Image (cartoon, rainbow, N blue to C red; front, side, top):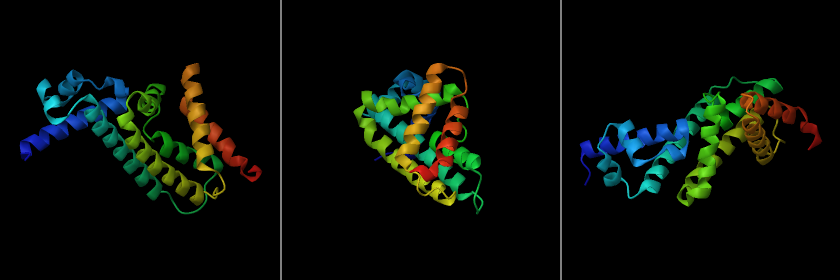
Length: 192
């Protein structure tokens, strides 16, 4: 049976690990780094979590929950009526990449989390669940913006490919390039 103090300590560890995942990517999650960020003894990270993958799963799930909750609130707050193609593209990118994620460094940490599923198979179900919730929100934004015919898989592939290419080019404009590509996709909707 876990005590309230134990629950608080476990919560502090998960919260600290989630911040590290969100800010620097999954590779930033190490027992020492998490213990320092949470202000707990190093042994606490191994007491409450079977291994580093167990902690990484909890942290990645937390980040996914936080991001989809923020995206859900963003979509719920959208005013009724159609928006311009550019405005709809901006909302779609906010849902997909996160409204607060503006810099290339933040986007790189975001994509590193998704790529970590290749090195950490335990993350795959968590990432798949986050992706499904995000896709459902994208469908809603597309429908509310009058773009029901745009396939979500194509939208995500275009946005991810554009952002990753821009990150490789390193010009600091990954988010702007992604919004531009999504706006162009939406403007060609009659060609599906």
